Image (cartoon, rainbow, N blue to C red):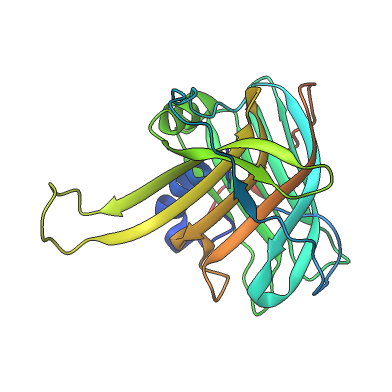
Length: 241
């Protein structure tokens, strides 16, 4: 958003970057500590027959929230923040004391991803994809498909609209063709405000560091107030990987 939520090596950045934020909402992050007992955040369908589909998700220019980044197959949950200011935005998952630590940013018209720590990772480049901003992200979100109205069983329960964004190649007409799903994003926004993001699933090539190729961001708070966005020094020193 990236929502979406993409900490990937430079070789996959060109593909992963755009997909990850489209899936997310912006791209990758989390809250908590390493644990195997994370509370369930599975959705429950809320039936509302003959109700028209709502407007698709739209990430606001200014916001700030806290939550967790969940990588279930690695049994890792780390603290996560997601903030936006004047159209730029930043995700930070974990920190130096956690097994996972990364940041994703939309900053001055570019998408950056920098992974400081990840199990089995030895290289730590800052990858930059120029020509990507909030307007382009929201344009991609306009093509999301409405799945339904649901209730996220959390504390408190969240009444959300569930949307899906996907990237499949090659783009071919309906019929018997060989297709490859590159990325999938399930986005859960508040039913009363499409600009309040409560949960995002990212699945696909943007999650290459995860053996199961899927990661969750789950927000505990989400406020429509300006946050803080800071480009890491490693990303501001050319050349960028």
